[in-house]
Image 1 (spheres, rainbow over the protein chains, first blue to last red):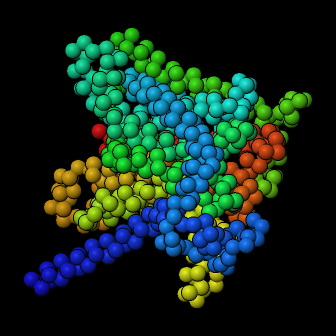
Image 2 (cartoon, chains in turn blue, purple):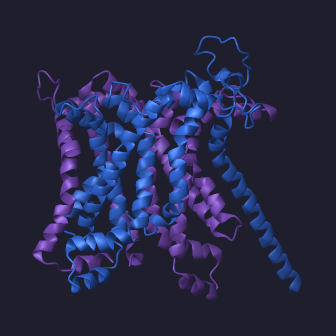
Image 3 (spheres, rainbow over the protein chains, first blue to last red):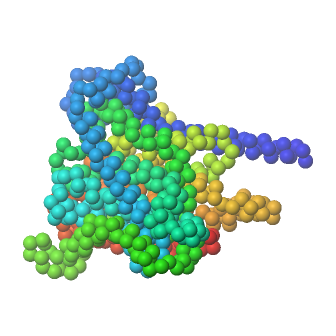
Length: 301
Length: 295
């Protein structure tokens, strides 16, 4: 009996070990592109073209630098330099301009989308009625639509309101994107009614209930939804291309996608710089992200 | 919980306040999405923007005989049907593995979330390095004695895209599942254990039951994200990728660029209809599965 127990425990330990190794492997695979981008941003541009040039040799004119036939995945640079960063941040103001374009597009979108969403989700979660559930269903449909479907309506409106080629054309529709409303409504619906009733007995107005009960209780969810929204729009490519023909207004994400085919030496440094805001946000908000939408579940909430 | 909210009887002013709250969002959605979408429906029923003759469903029948559209629809359907269930199952599996007592759990969690941080364009660059004709994966394949494949420019491209989608989305889905697993009442599982329930029984009859709302939620999120994968495909391969990678979004983008609004509107309306059907099915499914665990 004792031997069997021992065997069982041993087997369990073995199994746990296997799980650990598997997870470690998977986790490293997930982390790899992040590390690669950061590590390669410290390479000299010659080294990068030598390693990755083969990918683009048929696109760009044959460069004089030595280009290996194979594409080499390389984590550790031969020589650590900050040349790429110097080129990106100091020598050429273009990248900083684009970075600023990204900020000026993404921050208003995130802030206002969240504000609209807080109000709307409050409305959806209190006193439900038939109309509201119909509207909510329409929102879900809208949310799930591929961007290419809403692209035509967006384009039409931007054209009618004379907003094409301005930042407004991208920002305004994005503010009313129902994604955050969907998430937040579900969280708000889980708030126990007894809290609200208690507040009402104390004479709190609806506005007070929203600001003093709902918002603090949903703080985690709000932060994590804001992060998701921010990341999504920080990486947008399609919207600016379609709605703003003027590429001085384009965010860095669009530019970054073009750089891949051209000056690949800088691509990693630009990518790393572009990663900074999201990394900072992660450091601040990872716990919210993990706990935020804890109550998530279902479509109606 | 839901029923309780329904029962609360507010005064009239309070009800109105809750309606007013929806108003800003509703007006915005009307202005930027619903009203223009009605125009799109109208466009899909006329022959061209100048003559504006009503042609009924002609645009739709033309669409179905359009080879590019059917190809794109097939590819997109295949991609979504494979990748979305995979994303749900794999992330649930990962969450259950991570639920065990494993050292460094929170570090792993961060690792799995890291794909969210990397800008799409940089990711695409890395994937190009991996799956290029002379890239890392092919080097490994060759080292193992296999035949190298041009991953991105061959039908295997779909595999690459599915991997990319999973890589990007598993992390967050996993987080959602982990939270849901934590929320399963401990006592129920303990009772089941006392009664001698096996691991499999516990999984099917207790955990899955409690997870079903989250599964639906992750399903929806994954669906939304599966449509967003176009961004990566586009950056990876441009406007006219290999046959198997030609997605509906490519089709719409290219029709948009060639200003064929009729075709485009008809495709948009069709897609919208499809989404409505899918969501309705999911809603019904939620009503069936989610009821007894909701409170």
